[in-house]
Length: 187
Image (spheres, rainbow, N blue to C red):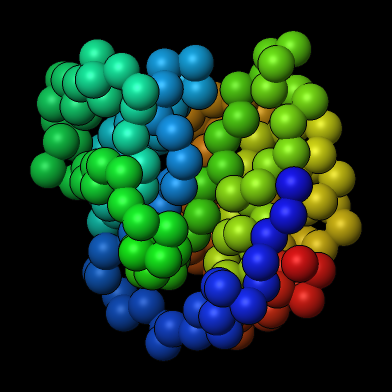
């Protein structure tokens, strides 16, 4: 696994969010069913139902149209379809540019014998961009976030992801910026 820091540009620096503005949560990667990304749709529904102005940006696609459609159907069924954007496959530079629009990077890796041995490339890319991250417990994700303190590592589950997003969203802008810089420094 490797991340080309030069291709990611300078860390994301954004002004403090205005009260009532929409928080963009971003995920970059495959949308294949084995990733169990429905957890992010459920998280979005949880956040929206509590009155939090959020949107979910999924950058990528699935090798099976059924997997993408399942996410869209779940979003519709939970009443959050208008707050979900799935970009489909994008050229790398465009995908990274879109991810830079996010306020928080999401790195869900469903625990399985196959995925437990994978390297969390997207997590490191988010950190290199200066984004605070919400990730779930996974051998490498936990170790990385413990080392850099640039995000939150939670158990698998929509309510856990939602709780971490709420916590990050309430932090002072200077603290969020410091977390972003710690992630970039670590990367």
